[in-house]
View: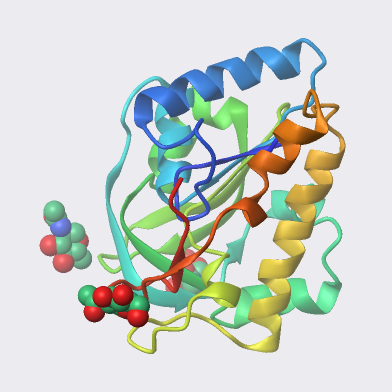
Length: 230
Ligand SMILES: *[C@@H]1O[C@H](CO)[C@@H](O)[C@H](O)[C@H]1NC(C)=O
Ligand SMILES: *[C@@H]1O[C@H](CO)[C@@H](O)[C@H](O)[C@H]1NC(C)=O
Ligand SMILES: *[C@@H]1O[C@H](CO)[C@@H](O)[C@H](O)[C@H]1NC(C)=O
């Protein structure tokens, strides 16, 4: 957590990223940090993705792009081929990603491809790496990465492939789905390795470790398996 920030979404962790205000401040300060040569990656999942678009556009461009409890392949764009996010993917897995339902969608809102491309701020800040078709037929941006900044957004949920099991939901659990999730977390951790951030001392670091907290079983009343309370 000291070297990267995951923004809102289910991967939400740490104190910096749980409210819109707070996330806005974080996003702005991360732009400034990166401008100053301080490599500081940011990842937004689902609502985190949505928030990134609001912060970068400076306005709310979200519309109904409902894709609720559906697993889909990604329609990768030409830019995905030269992206950082998918750079280290084996070609077979990248192909599977476009053919098999490896990405779980649980959202009501998103940014359509048209709105995204018509907005100069979004278009100049992010490369669109994939799109998908919502239940109402609208085409929404499903994956994006910063052109200049190590900022990443997915409208879908890579974490469910490995960590959520409720059979009511379409969580992809195939070997390719699990690889996809693992490769993306490896990718983001590797981005974190480029950061020089560190704790001031070992005591602070130990205290911040997730191992200092006990997970609580919550699958009997939520779609999640475990939660940490800070
Ligand atoms: C990918 O794009 C094609 C053509 O626009 C569309 O028919 C198809 O439904 C899309 N697939 C997904 C998974 O969104
Ligand atoms: C959004 O679209 C979905 C699918 O077309 C529809 O079921 C839902 O009622 C819409 N919601 C709103 C708020 O318009
Ligand atoms: C869920 O399970 C936990 C642990 O067994 C238990 O303490 C809690 O009361 C349960 N909650 C509900 C809503 O059933």
